[in-house]
Image (cartoon, rainbow, N blue to C red; front, side, top):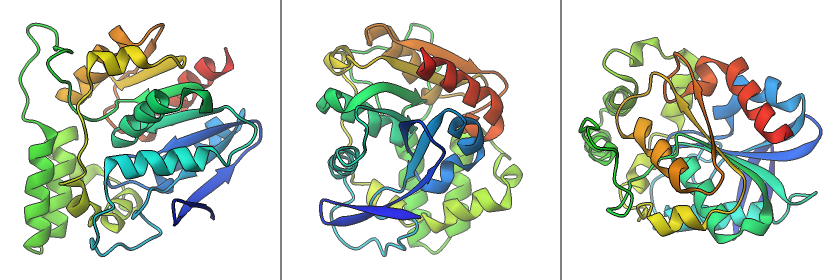
Length: 270
């Protein structure tokens, strides 16, 4: 584990492999360990740099302070990328990390060579309507709010199960490997910051502003808003490519690391 000083914070990261830099940004409850399953496949052709965002493991945050904001995390990633050579780099984000990567591409496209968004999180505003007939699903923000209530009541395990099963379905929590569960537990208090992170919804003009060559990846078994959002964004990002990892859900890179790694490799190699 190494770190860069960014915006007054020591941002931890793990680096493996040789080649062009590929910086990977985790989502909610993740950290640099999120990408362990695909470090092998991806590092065959890239120097993979997996970061831990501000207040995530290895920090053990006490949820005190007001700097857990989407804008802060975007600024931190930009400051991190400015220290990586050779530039421009490839950037990949998953879920909330996909939202961060999207905002980095929007704000500082000159830092990026290619962009990979694995089911980016967030909401669509009215300028990006979902296709007609799309089933309605409770917003994930409501799940997060409920998990925050459970953490404050002392039910950490219940909070994690509530959030995870809101994405992967009822009963999915018991199938999560022990190491993956521990990673989520290590970052559970970041829920308390995320409830007021001030994340803006995606707009049509946001999507049209992305000029970096972009790949959007979804899990074939993902349901709810996360299965729709990346497809809508792909329609409005110029030249965007798409890929589906069959029989995998939101954490598709853990569930089928070889296929995920091959999809990413093909896109980055072009």
